[in-house]
Image (cartoon, rainbow over all chains, first blue to last red; front, side, top):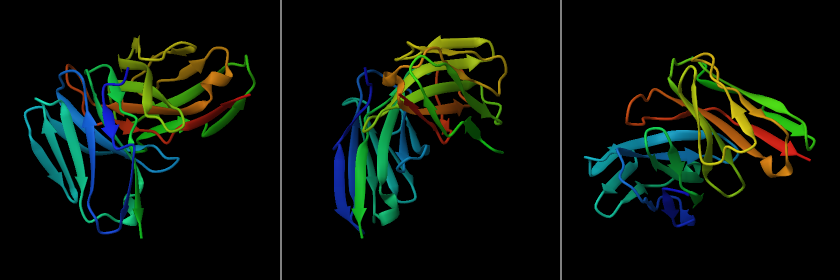
Length: 109
Length: 115
């Protein structure tokens, strides 16, 4: 079973707009991670937020974590065409990690 | 550092054939894992290892074997390939030990087609 589930499944925006995607999970976590996957490529780590953190920033990325709702959101500000990719959240235990099915983001020029 | 490397990049097999997907990392990471990704889906954990000599099953282990004789290498063996194993396979490593997982470093993937 999948621990993390992202929504929306697909998102299409214009360049310069902000993109928000969400992840919900089922059990308690130590941390939650977000990854990007460009078409046909491996996954690249974007950001990790720990269970005692509520918000974290990295460049144009902003991640929030609400452990009471078991949810996280990833905000990409001022999107670029190069941000077009699939985005996945990663949760789970120390030994068995689980990816969600991902959000496919398309940024139109 | 080369990071996580996988070979081959692409492989075609006939049903019933066996093969080994290679994965190596040069970051001295204890934790290594194998995932498969089917079209339009996330990654599903096949097997993982928390150190040399220690392996365990993930979510979808049937039809696959692994071993971990060294810290660097974590090969994945398909015993008797089936069309349902057509997928993209990713290997990952992480410096994680203990109870908390940290950043996963992924290889470029192996595309496997089973006819």
